[in-house]
Image 1 (spheres, rainbow, N blue to C red):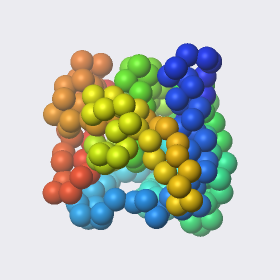
Image 2 (spheres, rainbow, N blue to C red):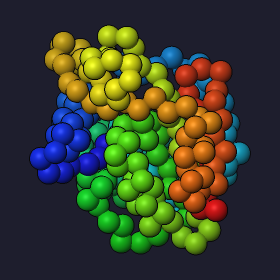
Image 3 (cartoon, rainbow, N blue to C red):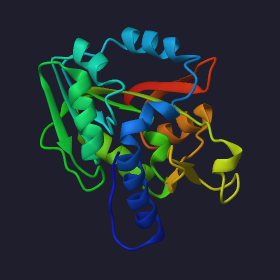
Length: 219
């Protein structure tokens, strides 16, 4: 995961989100959604046919990292949680891997990549940081680079501690410990239009389950 910041409410929530993902690392897969629609995403990623040097943002416990490594010449995986990176590095087991611990909005890429990938991360970017995040993505790409992302808009009723209109939710660890985090319930069509307004050309597709994926590049 990513982000740290100053003292405003968004920064504070982002700090709490990092702490949550550090704490949940060991039990992350206990909280995974139903796999309905997951095969569609894997097929879409195969069709996308990524190649070259790949940057994975917010890699988490390596849910996608090994799959990326099978297709890419190299993978650089970035996450704010050292606990997540430790799991990801163990699960990936591939050559050409580099793991970087960094806060995504304070991190600056040292180079550009052929593909930028992120799974189940965009919905954890607060709306106030949406444009800045996509500027980072643009800075990470070569001239004709491409982007693939996966996400969902699923939120349970008991998570909505500030109501359905708020993107602040509360999640619990297996021991009952509560943590605030961010979950922006993006609508695929509206998200596609929002990215178009920022100069991106994306096709975003909903699966039969809760997931959606986006594939595109700068227009």
